[in-house]
Image (tube, rainbow, N blue to C red; front, side, top):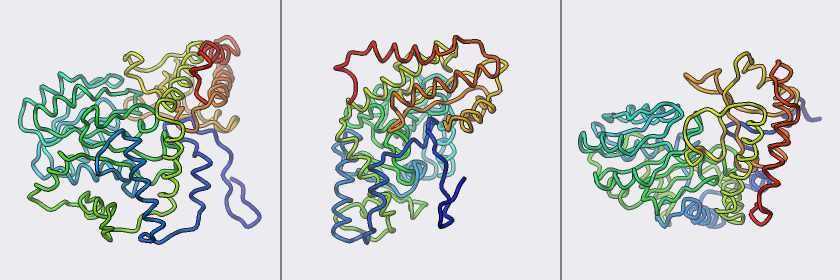
Length: 403
């Protein structure tokens, strides 16, 4: 890392193509450099109101409660679970990857009776498995990861939401990676609580967790018989802070709120459907290129159940996984992700999310990966990956291309 004339560090240029963070939208960085305001300054509370309205747009909801929790996506998940779950409550958690395991841990720390519903890593959780768990006893909450970034799985939610309604359980969806990159139709799917993050498809630095919950969740909060175990993550207090009452709960990270506003405005201007189409276009081009390089995607699910902003790639036999990532970073300035747990050393995770989801980045990644793999003896036709991606782009109707 170099320094500027004043001695301040200047990070090297990077193309962020991992599982997050993504490249920050320049509009977001400009917004975050604006002068600070007091948390109850009328100009700032007007910004807060706009952020809440834009959160409703992003989550496709009319919920009254839609605001960011101060903290990363994990803070939002903890706020939801610690606020809705009382000690002894039965909680069903879908686990088919690293972040399902995280939901289990958070629920256990809240004193819940946790019932894991497991699937093979790389598979979705089937509604029948959730229904069987719900039939085992009265359940307060079902928690699922919509976008499991450890495996690349996109979890369908609508059928499971109907089961939750039938069994009078709440449905919590971890939409940390999906919000702003694929559909998160909270109202239409009848998701009771959804939690996201800023550093993935919203292309904002990490530090806030957009969250929304409906009246069913509100009733559960109002009916609690024990005090919420966290003060900082107490949704009842946070909701009052993000309301006309402006309850003095904590000091919001003002610059981050500016940044989130800019990120959500960019989403609104692009439009949800065009944003989703852009992610699908670039991930399909990337996967066409990977196939031409004779690389295999991890997982057994069909395309409809694969994340459109993250691609898990199986490390070929005889290839040094860490050396590939290190060379990409050192020689090309490209960051891709490693893996967790049983998949560590076995897959790479390539993210094309938010501002990182561009034609240029896809082509640069494929060209660099082609070069690095051939340095290790991998046999593929030189340039085949880039050629396949270009062919995919050419095959898409110009009228369907994102702006």
